[in-house]
Image 1: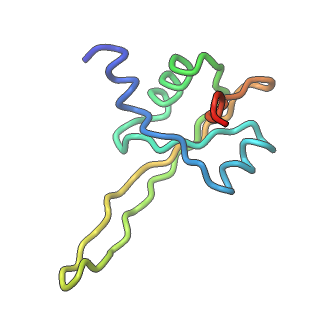
Image 2: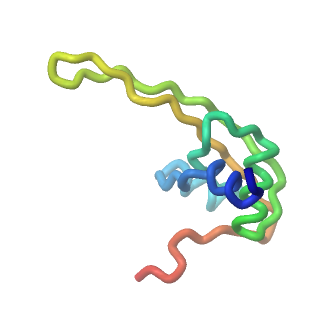
Length: 100
């Protein structure tokens, strides 16, 4: 597996919520949805290489998928993992740059 291929498989998308926006404004933190198999070292390397920033720390949380009813059939949403990445003071990632 090449280096770039694995980096894009680690990070799925930024989580843009009210809580993650507050974390970004107050604590210089960015929240990502990541692969469930990814560890903190892989997440840190992916963020540093893809966004050219310096990462201070990474916190991860495993979230269990909810049980949902689809008509008469009971189903379950997929489990997912969230990573809160703290960036070095003075650095930031702007996901809305260039949009109007």
